[in-house]
Image (cartoon, rainbow, N blue to C red; front, side):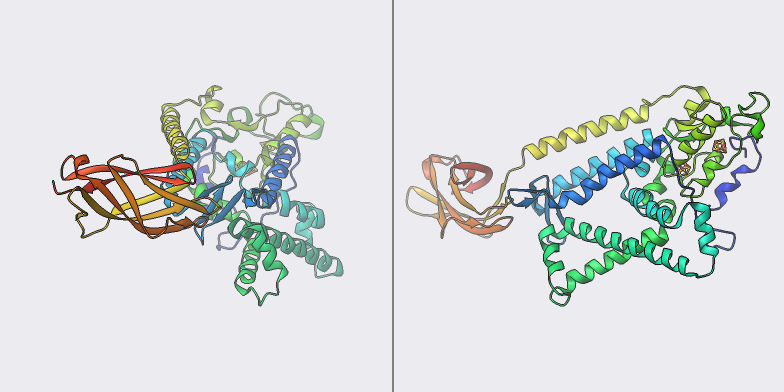
Length: 470
Ligand code: SF4
Ligand code: SF4
């Protein structure tokens, strides 16, 4: 097998993980601090995303959180809309749409999401790693510090770094919990003694410990070996997928140049001067010049590093850039392949269906069933009645006084007991009779429609059967 550089047996790098040595021990990665155009851009994007992530739980609409993902109590609020278990079909559809979107996006842009949007990368590279650089210095200084004996300076640096890590982990854990139980409940948990709310306190401790472990120890292992999205890359990407790629046609044969040769000569060697800076900045420890690899999180650090080198030696930037294998080989980018068009069509159908289903979603939902084991009752010579059971779900955050009416002039709906008042996001059940004029019946089985009102507003209509003597 040959790789991009034309070397034989170079697929060997696929036999091992860059972060594990031959004895199966972890190789700790010390990525050199990245700098450059893409890193700056990613920093600004991460500020925006972090502001949204930390700010969203505090935003309320009419006293209700804008977003609440309380899966434990089956209470979901998305952009002010309450979703109850009765909306499960909407949830399934939305998930399906999301999966197709992810697939389509990955087919075209690979792991772009990982580098720019994924919370793991954003927290790791833009928060925790920056604190590490600030306290311990760049890669070489970190290496030296780790090998150094435990002096006062080392203890101070290590303790302060881990103190920051714990504090940020606490902040993330509280935010995470705010999405699940709401910011008010989190504030309540914080203000009480741990023993008053032991469950909430323990949840905070466990989440804090998990985040601290992920960002202080596990790090790139999440992206390279644990994340299922990362593992899917092999089946989703193809030769037309835009990825962070090394232009092996321009770069090879690679060769070192001496300082006095700058600007670099344009003969004999390719544009890669084998400075290995692209490898040194990589947070997953890979060499992008070997070719596309599962471990690459598209963080752009190698693009910035190589652009800086190209600038210095007077060669064109973009030796490592966003491009597809076909783009590099043929200099043509082809995004709209048949596979992409097929995914897009499915995605559009799913999106339109989602919007239509959301648009037709009612704040009240009723289930009406004829009482089992009862056919019909004769009220008098001219009237027949049927007994029904109902369940009414209130999906709003306010109590609703519900009125049931029959949509037919030939009969009447009579409640057993009072009309229900349904509490917010709750269900109420009961029974009612429908009494029909015999003259209005067209046979044994008749279709009738029950209307459900909240005050004056018609909220739902349910069709059911009315049985007569025939
Ligand atoms: S940074 Fe650019 S020039 Fe240096 S080794 Fe990597 S690809 Fe080659
Ligand atoms: S190869 Fe480049 S883009 Fe991929 S993870 Fe490493 S530095 Fe980031």
